[in-house]
Image 1 (cartoon, one colour):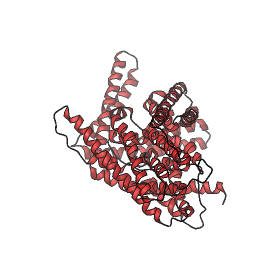
Image 2: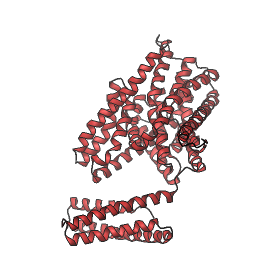
Image 3: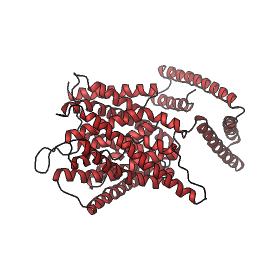
Image 4: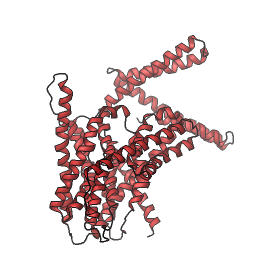
Length: 527
């Protein structure tokens, strides 16, 4: 089986499993890892080992960028304090604790145990975002979970660099040097990401071609990553900062038509890359286990203890941190602080590991500074892959029940009510503007009357949705309306195709009209 055939089969497998996960309403990353392990364990399946640069350069930038774009700038400003505490303190605590535990229960040397701790110290933004899309978390909690995983990269990179230096050169790194590296990676990466965002925003604000706009959006994360790495800063931080900055102003940079196209393309790219990368995690584990010599199955209980230790460390860190911050907020109003387990429990269980730890582990050098093979490298890779698979499967499959048990998830009716209120206010503002234009004779009475009836009908519909007494009737009316409109759109589409077949409309006109019908049908939603 050639390499190209293997890649194509991997893409097909990942796509089928991810599609099934959506249909069965289970977390796709978790199911992909399970499927990858099962397929990789088959005797006739060749071992798969993906070069680290393929993951770090080709796969990670667009996934990180997509995650960063989803973060609300307003919510991020509100949670920057806990994010800082988690991205700095919890990463340090996790790295040193896991390093000490690994040194005690595995044959790894203290320096290689610290390498393992640094690799597993930070949560993974790709996995956290992929799992979090299915959960109806409040916006601030969702931002807190995603921002922690996105902004703890600089800390873990510095720790990893220090740990690898100690393992390879058998030397020590000063605290001042480590702090300097941190500010170079984090600060430099942030500056690079900000500069890329400024340039891209300038280009996109002056581009009205959907194709060029799509290409620019696809190239942006790679440009930020490559520039960040070439300038010896954090390419990941550069991608994250560029994503957050551009995501906050995307509505001002392009029009609706371009936004729809770019969003559709990016969703496709993210779906494919996420599907493949999580399948790779599962596929690589059996091969790494076979390559591990003289360890038998001791690695299994070692990986289990390390994974449990990461969860316990998060509990011991997040619980007191949440209590302290809640106490600090309530002191100003004289209300006694009371720790709620709900948000800390969700935050703890959302701390999955994923693609980034695996990519970091793959970059560990093969040999030490003296040319001898680096002892313990294969065991670090096996333990890293095992812990990543454990968190994705165990925490991934159980995260939704934990969120439901916590009671912090947004109820569908709450979201629907908020949406109806916003729609009502938007339409009222549009109707007021229409009346102003009508009074100023800026629009013809016929056009104004038609628009007024349309806006008023939509206002009435939004107000019905807000009425508890008429909620059931409104639902039935809305469902009937959507079904009728879908039927009529189907008739319009069939008529359009018939006109095209009879050579009464050209292909460009057919494409334009069909897209308009498709957009309207998509806007009707499900019923």
